[in-house]
Image (cartoon, rainbow, N blue to C red; front, top):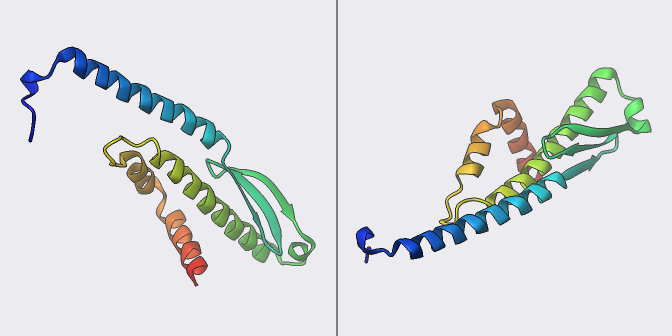
Length: 134
C-alpha cells in the first residue's frame, strides 16, 4: 500500500534521507579506496605486465621467449596480455561500483561503464571471457 506523501512526517523523512545519504557516502569512500588498490598482472610465456584501474600500463617485462619473437608477434603478445589485464581490472572495478549503486538495486553507474567501453575493447574482452569458459 502506498503511503499518502502528504501524511509523511517531514522530520522523519529528512532523518531517513540523511541516513541513506550518509550510507551512500560511506560506500563511496570505501569504493574509492578499493579502486585505488586495483591492480591486474598478467603473466604469459612471452611477457609479464600489469595495469591499474584505468587500464594504464604500470609495468612490462619481456621474457626470453618474447625476445625471440618478431616485432609484430611480440606486439601482438603485449596487446593480448594488456587486453586480458584490462578485462580483469574492469571486472574488479565493476564489482566495486556495483557496491555503491543506489540502494534499490538499480545499477546506473555499472550500466554507464558498460556502455562507455569502446567496441574494439569490448570485443576483445568478450573473446577473452569466451576463451576462459572453454
